[in-house]
Image (tube, rainbow, N blue to C red):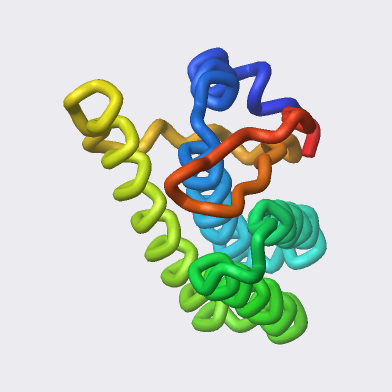
Length: 167
């Protein structure tokens, strides 16, 4: 398998310079795009090949969940519950191979991604006085995703020391 990060210098720079909120957005964007890959593989009866991308989506969701570190805060609890729901939904998608359930998963991922994009825009505007108006270009499917650091308060995002492109 190819390493899509190192083959795409723009994406590599984007990941290396991204805030924790932007990394969260990028992970959600990647998970969402991988649902399209799975759908395409299912349509061509390549169910075995789709497994690797379903696993990658699960790894992304687990990474997003692990980044919610303060489960005592109401917002953190809601976010962790959402990721647990998505992981359970992914399990149902994997066992049923139902394209509608996959589309539903994609839709929820899109809403969560768009929410984080709004936060990233606010974060960017507060720093630079401008907003990002579009998402970064999608990369080709790759088994390598960035490690996302934890946070406890959405107004004070901090990255972890464990950042890795090999997650």
